[in-house]
Length: 158
Image (tube, rainbow, N blue to C red; front, side, top):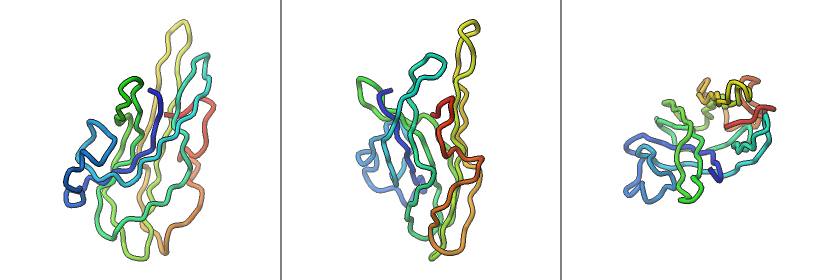
């Protein structure tokens, strides 16, 4: 991979625009409306390996029209050479957006390199939506709970 991106998709059938596949950089992804696509990776050295990880913010605000949505939150990777963007990790949830209220989704995103030179290395990752809640008022700028991956871990992130 040469880059990574944070992506938010709506896969609700009546929200997907005509010619959706020409409006998204993601190849091989399910039929969707692309709501947010933010490239941004960084590199680190972990256990002697140069790794590329998604450099993401702890909180994103994304205005959506009121109604029901099936949202997919994903990490995408750009393939070296072809430049094709593909989904690497994703999780989805059905949400309700109510007028004048905010719907908060908490994502746990974590990965680490396991192993040693003797046994070999592997990557263990977790990418899942922990909770969805409807809150009073509009979007709030607050830190996610400790269980959400808000800061880089020494082991790196996806």
